[in-house]
Length: 221
Image 1: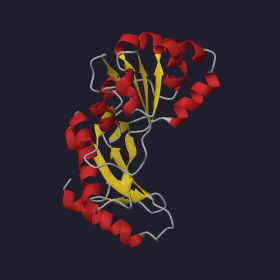
Image 2 (image 1 turned 135 degrees about the vertical axis):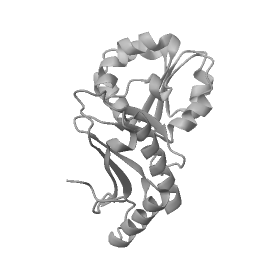
Image 3 (image 1 turned 180 degrees about the vertical axis):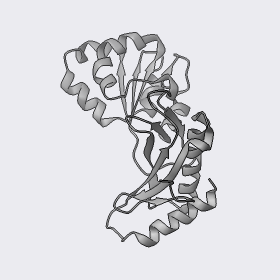
Image 4 (image 1 turned 90 degrees about the vertical axis):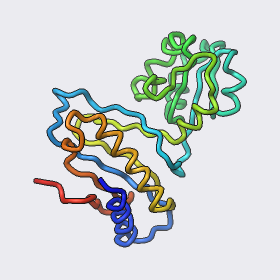
């Protein structure tokens, strides 16, 4: 998939979509072929986009005293091990916490304690601190670099269908930056597929309130 083809589609999106009084997300859809989810492992990747989206990404951290000073500087919400007991019987507050944050980080030394208290609620929402995203760290970790990377990170998943959908930015971003984000996502998915780009049926982009435009050749029926 050529970057120029993506840029052409983004320009087409702008031309064909009516102007709105609000910013619209630019969604990317990757449909797969020859990829049976019953036979192949579901795709579940974390990719740091080269260009930040305007979407506010909220981060929460579970830490002990060792990482507390760092965490307070760069995370939106910080919960220490000593505070865990008051959360045990607060399922409503845990659900609110989960809904208000995009990523959760945990210090590895207290991961088991955190899972015992928050695991049921966060796990059901797919928001447990995930080593794949670099969200389980030792007490010596640099949290500033981790937080910076997480704010540009997106999750690529196949759930019940052989397709991946996510937002790569919004209509306020430049064509160049949107195209770079799309390329990063595409390359990450292709690298994960057993047959590479031959497992891609088609790739398409759309604005929130606009129609879908396929990149390159039309999808084969």
